[in-house]
Length: 260
Length: 273
Ligand SMILES: Nc1ncnc2c1ncn2[C@@H]1O[C@H](COP(=O)(O)OP(=O)(O)OP(=O)(O)O)[C@@H](O)[C@H]1O
Ligand SMILES: [Mg+2]
Image (cartoon, rainbow over all chains, first blue to last red):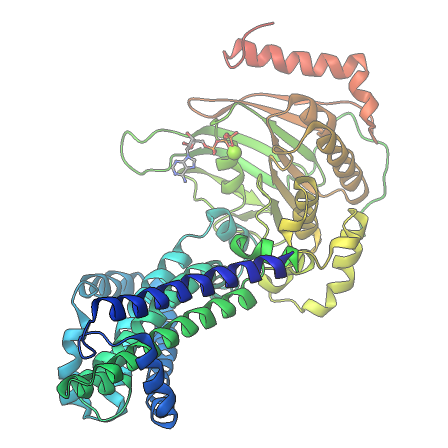
């Protein structure tokens, strides 16, 4: 049953993608759109297939930056949220500051990070982590707060120490929110990595896009964009897969489990 | 071990020192001057091993009183002693069964029961066998490794009771534990609870909306009125134990329930029959 449903879903996705690509190819050919404005998908595919080593290397670099940035965002995000929920002082100071600075367009800080951290991988990881950390902290904090008061009373009635309340009640209770934040965070981390590569660097898909723009090499820019969307999608589903492993008990996962 | 099942003493001429002693307790949630009084001058003693039920209309402060006794809410005036110690925080040797079962979705039934062991800083492995045995007694033997959401409402409430019993508390506080269940399941659990209390003689405070349930289970029924929450009457229930569900058909049972219903009618809580 689940297998059939999943394959049905996969079939729909593949169908929609093929339709889009087909329409794109057809439109370019029919209207004679010039290649440097919008290359047809066949040309983009050829571009990738002709330089597999190059694209593999650039993709892996961007994935690497994104993954490290995201991992840091998860670690710091959850850590900060625990600190905020544990301490009234941090709640008033740090959390207020976080909420206030959330509206600052953080990509604007990318050039500053280059000044601080140089042109290597560090500023890119930093900017990826910085944008990804916000949805994770905020969601985790909200999730840890939204605990049934009876659950806290239950723990208090058994004279549970504070760290038990945090680790055995608040944190697991927040897991669904943490994953909601992480799904936004992983996309943000990828954006951060690309912006970092735009600003400074000589590697990564962001860098590839930037340099091909300078030479009007549109097939190459589009190849990088296509690869980026594939990477973004795979990373998103990787987080969702983790969610399924971690949260077999959550309402959103129950049907999946029951059907297995 | 606890004293065996002896015949009930009907005369309470020389009550032992109370296990729970509530004296002149008032409570309001806000500290302002014109804060609404939720509990007004409550005085109630519960003897060791006694089964006391509280009935009262919604909002009369039953849960609040339970939380005060449990040390989960501070009192505004008066004092509460448990085992001759002033209650400022949850006392040791106490367990609560809530109206909603409050099982953790991310833990199996067994792990939910053992949670109380972990909270108390005891060793899990010393209690696994006991937990499984308890769950088996309560008909959950096949469900120890299931998640709460795979259980029916009655099974979940049974699991919650097992969780309260795992550390063998002396004082058991139950806040409308069967309120959300259908009549048949409720009857079942009532019988089980009466049996449990009869065998272990825990000091038990049981809150309920159900007059029949209160009379069937308790040694004494505390009838509360609201606005502000106060004790209207305390009624001794002299029905011999162990009780079976059929005592509900006896005339004396009917007299008790009629008396309580009349009391509620005179308090304006329910319309007179
Ligand atoms: N945490 C709280 N903060 C403020 N007011 C509260 C709080 N809890 C309860 N109250 C108020 O105290 C009063 C008594 O509530 P309580 O929950 O003790 O009633 P109850 O007798 O248990 O009712 P029910 O039978 O519906 O459970 C109510 O008016 C309620 O609004
Ligand atoms: Mg209540």
